[in-house]
Length: 175
Image 1 (tube, one colour):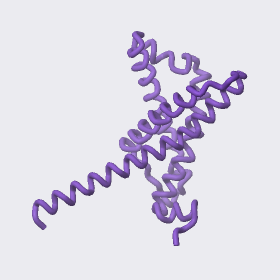
Image 2 (cartoon, one colour; image 1 turned 90 degrees about the vertical axis):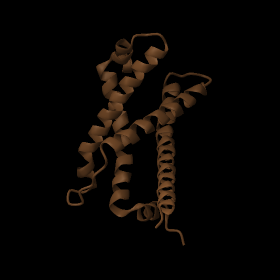
Image 3 (tube, one colour; image 1 turned 45 degrees about the vertical axis):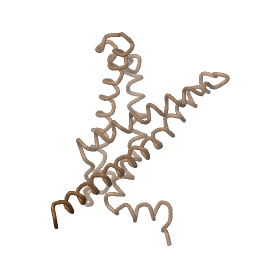
Image 4 (cartoon, helix red, strand yellow; image 1 turned 90 degrees about the horizontal axis):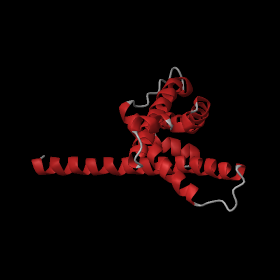
């Protein structure tokens, strides 16, 4: 192989990797977006807001994109590992807690940066995440875990069986 062929091969694989990462980010944003829009809709109806403001769904989708980015960063830093002898659920239980802590930590940082953008102090903005209420932060943690857990199970099944087999199980096989 010539150097030019090797360079084109590496370039193509980098392009494919970028496409794959963008596809993962988009899919994960849609997944989180469905959850966050549902939660926002529930909150608006619980508060009996009429008419329901549409901007809450835009904010939910932005939050979904940010959360997807955080999850992909967490996966890059701490890749999913499935031990077939332990099973997918047992293998991923600890990892789900690690991802939850990572996403919560990044949400605290996001609150701090948001505060800076709005002319507030970083630390006080960070501690205002979840209105600074431990019970509310715990409730947010449970919601985030319930959102992340099915995604991790899907990723574990995908890793154990392969993408083609997983998609065939979920959506039927292409013929």
